[in-house]
Image 1 (tube, rainbow, N blue to C red):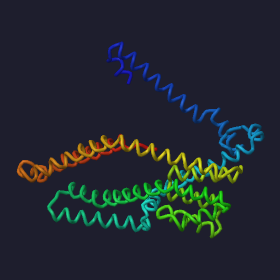
Image 2 (image 1 turned 90 degrees about the vertical axis):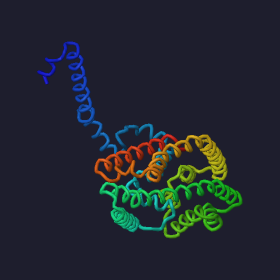
Image 3 (image 1 turned 60 degrees about the horizontal axis):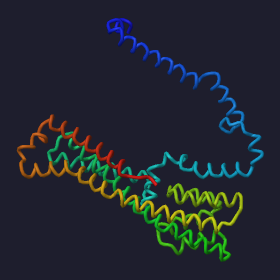
Image 4 (image 1 turned 45 degrees about the vertical axis):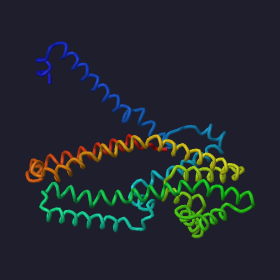
Length: 331
């Protein structure tokens, strides 16, 4: 390295040396932050206190109710993190597909093998056959599950504010919260009726209301349902007028839905443009195959052509993912 620096012009050598020194200093500082004396002390304090190293016992004693509420919120919000490893099972539950994960994977494997066999019978190359097998065996089932999940979630969100109004009216008329949830489960259409029926059945087998709602959040990880669980958790911990709180929550959810619909309407033009741009390469290739098969035949008859098709397919997929990221808005 020193010989390489000596062969460089003096100005460039100085700049390179300064950059290397800065990198060494940065690496040393990061090492000290993670493994230095201060970091070891913080880890020991975290182990002793059992609360992530935040030594705020005096303030927590002065505000026990607030600490209890915050702990309850962390418990409700932590459900999503604990279940991150079960993403595929959650997607199947959100789509309303009552299939075990192993059965779903077996179906995907069978479709992959069948698509690969059909592609080989059609005299496609090895790369082309693998691409067809991946599309029909992995991409197509994933697409179907995603579409079903989005439709079911959209129906759930559209019905959720009305179901909260049912709870509000029931509480104001003197019914307990569990009975109101039972009414929603039997009177409201699916998917919200099915989810609240599962909450009622979970309570019948001995789970508390908060635990049953936490399982509902696992099955349907929506911000709206999480708001409802947080309101119930806070009310059971601190008390208060639950009907009034849920009525305000219903208004907030309706305003949120109106805002989401407005954003989707504004993004419709960009979404249409993305669909057109993304479909152009496929349309052009199909048109050339139909009009001038000899012109594009080399792509399907040679190894170089297969490599070019594979590279084009990968860049097309990357472009579609980038456009999808640009036109989707999380609310």
